[in-house]
Length: 358
Ligand SMILES: *Cc1c(COP(=O)(O)O)cnc(C)c1O
Image (cartoon, rainbow, N blue to C red; front, side, top):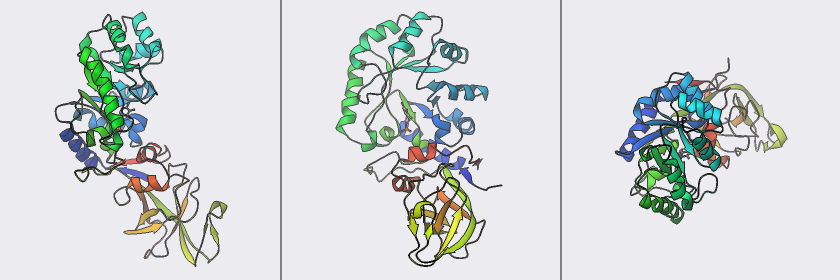
C-alpha cells in the first residue's frame, strides 16, 4: 500500500499543551479540535487531550456527535451552536454547551425553556461582521436569557480578527467593546484564541479558546517580542518516492509545461498530491526534505503525485521517504509558497492520508 502518511507526535502535542497551560495560567482552557482536530484526527486527539483542559471546542454539531459516540465525556462547546430544535434536544441529552449568535437561536431557547444547555456562550460581533449580536443589544439580550437560566451559566464571547498582528488598534477596539458590556453585566468572558494567548500578555479572560498552538504551528503574522514560542510541530506529512527518471535539458515536467529542465535533471515522483491536501498552487522551488537534504519542487503538483528535482540528493531511490512538512520543513514555509495559511494546510489533509500516532 501507498506509504503516504501523516505522523502525529503525541510527545510534541503534550509539549505544546504545557506551553499553552503556562501562558494561560489559571484561566480556563477550551482546546479547539474542530475540522478533524485541524487535520490531526478528531477522536484520537480528543482522547489524548481530554483530561488536560476544561472543555473541547468544535465548530459544528456533527463533530460533537462523533465525540459523544466515541464515549468522550469531557465538556464540549459547539461554536456554531444548534441550527434547529432537534439539534438542541441532542445538545441537552448529550450535555453539550452552545454558542448563540443570532435571534433565531435565542427564539428557539425562549420557546423551549425545558431545553437549556448547561453553558451558553453569547457571541458578540465586535468587528468581524460574520456572527454575533451587536454590543448595543447586550442588555436586553442578557435580561431575556436571565429568565431561562442562571447568569453564572452565561459567557460573553467575542472573536478577534487581527490578533495575529499582536499589539494592534483593531484588537483593542474589539476588546474595548466587550469590556463595555462586562462593565454593566458581571459575566464570565471568552476572548483569546492562539495569537491572543501568544502575544497579548495583559489581556485576561475567563475561558481561552486555543487551537493552532496545540498543533505546534505559529499563530503570529508578526514576530513576537520575546523571540517566539517554544512550540513543536505535531504533524509530519510524509510520502515515498515512487519513480525516478531524467528530464533532459529543455524538457517539461508535469502538467502545462509549468517547469522546464534548465539542464539534465533527475526527477523523483513522490506519492502525494493535491487530493491528499498538498496544494496544487505550491510554487516551483518550494522545499521538500529527502535523506537529510532539501530538494526543490519541479513542476505543477498533480492530484495524486508531485515531482521534485533530486539531482543534488545523494543515493536517492524508490521507496525513500520525503517529508512535505513537519520537523524539518515548517508548515509555514509551504503555506507561504502556496499563498495560504498554516491553518488551511493542516485542516485540509485529506481522508486518504492515514494518521499514525507516535
Ligand atoms: C477556531 C476558533 C478558535 C481557535 O483559534 P486558534 O487561532 O486556532 O487558536 C477560537 N475561537 C473561534 C470562534 C474559532 O472559530
